[in-house]
Image 1 (spheres, rainbow, N blue to C red):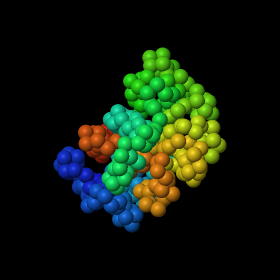
Image 2 (image 1 turned 90 degrees about the vertical axis):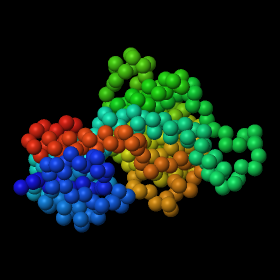
Image 3 (image 1 turned 60 degrees about the vertical axis):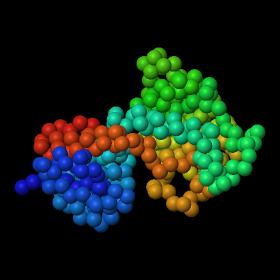
Image 4 (image 1 turned 120 degrees about the vertical axis):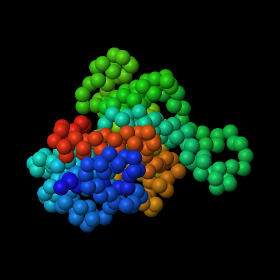
Amino acid sequence: MKKTVFITRKLPDEAVAPLREKFNVEMWDSEDEPVPRTVLLEKAEEAHALWTVISEEVDRELLGRAKNLEIVAQMAVGYNNIDVATAKEQGVMVTNTPGVLTETTADLAFTLMLAAARRTGQAERALRAGEWKSWTPMGFTGQDVFGATLGIIGMGRIGEGVARRARGFEMDVLYHNRTRKIEAESMYGFQHAELDDLLQMADFIIVLAPLTDETRGLIGKRELGLMKKTAVLVNAARGGIVDEQALYDALRHGQIWAAGLDVFEDEPIGLEHPLLELPNVTALPHIGSASIRTRLAMMKLNADAIKDALEGREPANRVV
């Protein structure tokens, strides 16, 4: 009898085809709408493999009902939506998709920094609304990126990718990380800094740390108060790392210049969210890894991991 794979979003046929040859594959029929919790729980009871995205909660309740489950393959680097401790207890493997999305996500983080600094979103909205009446000497003026100081919080693969890009803009790069990156410091001239020092010195701050108990709420009212009034904060990691109310207050009162956000504490963010009311916020719908090539590469990693796990081999990129 074939083992069962349940995929929580509709994926391209080319990504799923290798699994259909060997397993019974069931897939939620919408790309845009998340699978309802009741359906996910029902499917998990029979599944030997779950192929998930970050919006699905793979918690103790689900894992407790998934008696056949051997692997959860997460289509992301982060896996804070998965109860990995319970998965480990129950002998369920968890894999993710590191590496293949590094450069694409670094591109997006750098793009957000540029867009927020130069107010491109605000300028485009004005143009499309017919508000561009004439050239004005100080119209839509922003902050220069070239030659500025960049602070990176979380110097993993993506952080290093952003820092390499910053060299082309002749930026001074500071970083804060749990562990020093001595080799990268030597090779690229990055400089390690304590968090408070980085916040005070940087013109641009990009958050790229994973969401953990230690990083949840890492950037709050106190930390925002240390930043320059001309500072731009970019979050391309996870929404829970930045206190959104504190960020709103800082932006509204001119405590910092602007923010570029690809992630939010609750996703998808509602149109009524206060941050979306601010002209100095550049907001994107969590598209850090969203290039065609990268998303297909992520899917291949997931499919390979599922196939290996269900056929008794050790899958790559195993978290637990």
